[in-house]
Image 1: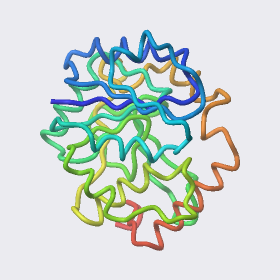
Image 2 (image 1 turned 60 degrees about the vertical axis):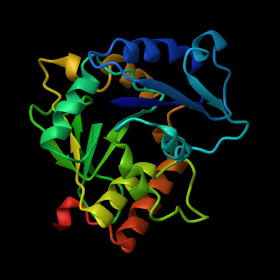
Image 3 (image 1 turned 45 degrees about the horizontal axis):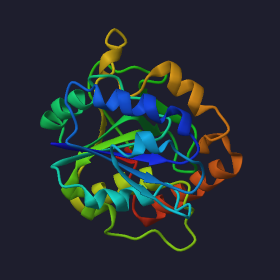
Length: 242
């Protein structure tokens, strides 16, 4: 029922852990695919067992959502390369989408202003665990959705001056909101049940603050602010305006 899409860039040392975590899910993915941007060499002994596409150019964070069009299953789950899912994450997503038919992720953000990306309120594994499903503006680190919703992602193309490194998370939730009335949610992440979480917390914090992390680059934070304001101008309605 589920195709998993991985994104390879500058963290080859964590691929085995990520693959082991995905293969050990209580709901086994039908297929594992990996889009590799130019950035590092990955162990061919690991990638030979999955569908692996190696690009000689860095197309950034948007390319994996184009690559996902090759999936053949009803559901798709895309992972950042710094996200090691707990064993019941796919099960958690499948159970959640039955009751909350929307885009799901392991970190959710509610914007607190229309003037910029920050400040934000976060939900999920990182610093604000949620016992119940929570509606948010956008999700990140992992995206679980119905494959057919990819048509909404590409209803509006990114503008030529849009950054390749940020904005795909905002864009997806915006397109689903605008063209299909589909909301964005974070599945339950109870403090007492880390096996349901979409990310291993210890590794997630470690990788999220290393030199490969996009969010640690102040230039990228500026681009995220610009993208957020541009999306507001285009019609994105964050929860604070509803």
